[in-house]
View 1 (cartoon, helix red, strand yellow):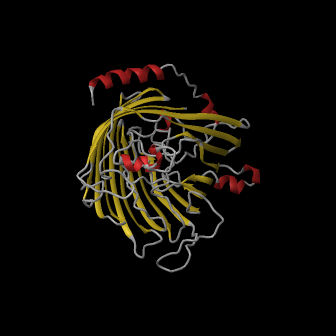
View 2 (cartoon, one colour; view 1 turned 180 degrees about the vertical axis):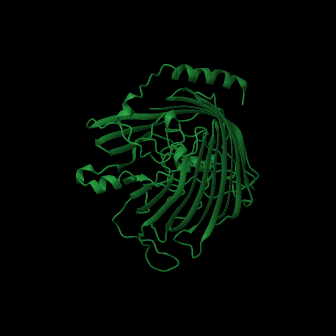
View 3 (cartoon, one colour; view 1 turned 120 degrees about the vertical axis):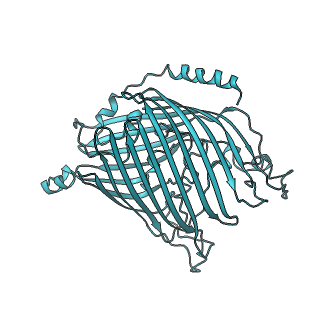
Length: 454
């Protein structure tokens, strides 16, 4: 990356963001709520601590905004390939330049409906994958059921939370740290995992929290990103019958405790399973797109897309989706350790599944580790970090492949709601066939991102 870009872009973004002044008082009126700024870092499930007094109906309107500057270079060794209807070698890569990406924005509406009952509605105002505004989803969360006027129920609800709606699937812990459209403030890096486990599905999740730190979650969803009442026309190649709409079952068991003032320990295990589905998207449910742009796309193919914007024709650059759309059985373990300013977040995942046209299951395994140091001790508003992420998978029509990513980051919370981060990333694609555009693929470079959350 040319030094002059770094010299100009960094101060320009900082100067623009410094004009923004945001008050955090509104979120103090919402109970059992994850803050949208720095205070939401390393928050997973919302706490059962009843710290906000209920004073009637309250509405909090918040938002997330991000602006990213990309300076990446890419290459591959794929054999030249021509296809009817396309000009030239369709395995040649789009030439990249250093520049700004499309800014992304989210609109968040949180409502305190009653004592211990709140509602969330999240909207994607603009994103790479959907340039128009979309409703991401919404849910209602019950931490109290005082309207039942039952002392027994009130005592039970001191340890129980219920969340119902079109909601993030609580599979694993990584989805609590990932970038979600304009909401990038929880992520110490610019992008998510290579295999990005995230979707919104209609259902319910039930939590039990013990004062010891032990907790359980059980849930049931429809297994779909887009609901339908139309019977499936697709045929399952295994049974020879139309696909069924089986519910997806998910669960989590964990232990999360602040052992002392310096040390926090969290360990969880999660499962998500569905036997027959019309179009499951657990590994591809992101409607906003990757934060790395145009890495392994061909210009002739992009120009021939029927979509309005070529950015949208291949929105998941740098990610791998194994395509388990019909059947999926997935397991994830997560370890989070925090000693003073030093943090480790680790992920180990194994998943098997298949598409409707397949008669046997394929597999994918993913490992990742983040090591973050936040400083100074009293504010922890700066950080340095490193991530290693590797995926091995059996891909349909491709075979066994490996994708490795290493990233380093440096970040700064200018205020509790304004963040800047810089990342150096390097990713390699191994074992792809010579006719595949990802054969010998690699990219590397620098990313700069500014983010606001309130």
